[in-house]
Image (tube, rainbow, N blue to C red; front, side, top):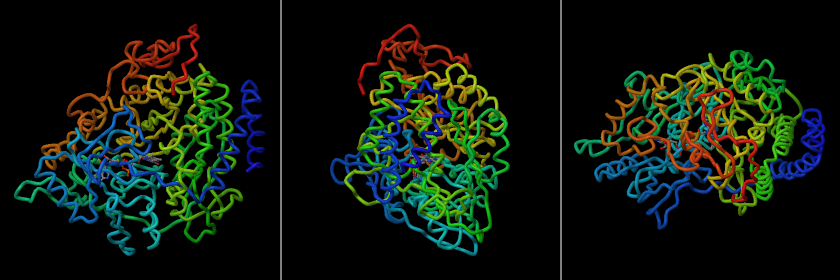
Length: 614
Ligand SMILES: Cc1cc2nc3c(=O)[nH]c(=O)nc-3n(C[C@H](O)[C@H](O)[C@H](O)COP(=O)(O)OP(=O)(O)OC[C@H]3O[C@@H](n4cnc5c(N)ncnc54)[C@H](O)[C@@H]3O)c2cc1C
């Protein structure tokens, strides 16, 4: 560990500006040492995340939250009770009883990983239907290369079950804590332009769905959907936002197991606009980590190789490993201090060190499950595609946890995630570069959270799936505990968000983002009317719909909430200073590159140290 830190800090002395300061470097070295000890040594233990549904008594009087413990508008969502079906028959009777009673329902999952308020139902009289115990494999058919699972099965289980019969899901999200139903709820994906693209739902051949029924049907209807028999309904159900009913079972078409050969290469970003358009056509599992303030890009050169190629590599992504709670608390406190004192140099020094360390440790790749001995790392698809070892379920009293566990003082961030059509990616990257030219340090905050992850997606027949070949940009950045506290250089990230969404019509990830990203989103989907038709047919009284789903689907109401300070948390776009933080010097101003943007900008000349109110 010490060697890695020595290596990366000396690397840093070449890559970072001297003005970032040697004290900062020393500070970050110490922090990183703690961090590395917690991630590299304590990798086998972790306290598992708590259940997102909590009830005051038994299964009644319940609330739900997301895996970060806070929704974008910080509201709490309630329901009268929660049901935990263990079989499809139980699920059908639960849906029937609630339909008969005219009760609102929403599906919740084991971890509730969507940031947006998708898990919520309206009021406090509704019903949560959890898929926590609908987590069994139904059938694996090696010859037909299909696997049928219940919808509460996690990606981790899915990968393992497929591997048992020599099969592999070719593309998937990188975090394996997601459930099959949840991935289909929001169109979750990995990175590829190849095959049917990187979205999980595009490898599904059959969906079993339980929806409200008429009294003649016993108040619940079970439908089996496929491309051949029910193409419209199938394409609606592939990305359903949970508004069509409960997916009970899903059948995947898989591929024979294969291996991958991975290499990370770091280069400067001078030709990145061109590379971003073509790189995905050269490498099947390509992705990028862009470090715009450092002027660097990490290219993932990741290709399929025959299953008999030698190599037993393992990808256990470092930021998804369990971490020492004490290290997480120190890191969080240090970022809060940097925010309070507007210490951009400190953030940039930390960012450089973190990205150098991640690069030097191959992001958690090992050549044999233990150590990294050099590139390329070759391993089976089931060991290379996804990870998430912080979910491992040994209780250690929160000495260690997933880095974002809200029970401890840990990472707390916003996530802005959208896909920009490949035809516009170069211009978008140029716009970000123009912003960087104005203030080089402005995006160090993104690099503290590992940089901008960029992944390829393709157009999908799913009605609410991606419309074109695109690059999905994942921006993760500091969120203050106090919603009225502005963020260092928040105007830059807000401008990037608005450039993507409104200049380039980017599609926001349904399960991530702040409210403003969904303003008018449904207009961006040409098949939205077809989706709404199926919804009307399956659930005419909207029992599975909520205020939030009605807003994002353009049925009723608006996603933005306009009030003082609303733009600080992205629940509105500012239109007057009061939407920012005027007492802290943050005013609503036009963008610097995209003049149509309205962002909370710290007006120079006002020298206010933010009050410490986290
Ligand atoms: C650490 C982390 C890493 C992530 N990595 C990626 C990634 O690599 N790629 C990516 O695309 N996304 C990623 N995401 C986002 C994630 O894919 C989505 O938010 C996903 O929807 C979460 O799945 P979940 O199982 O937690 O479902 P939830 O968030 O609980 O549910 C999502 C939606 O699906 C509905 N739903 C769930 N199950 C069913 C069912 N059985 N029937 C009907 N509706 C159902 C819910 O009602 C809800 O509307 C990540 C999120 C986190 C927190």
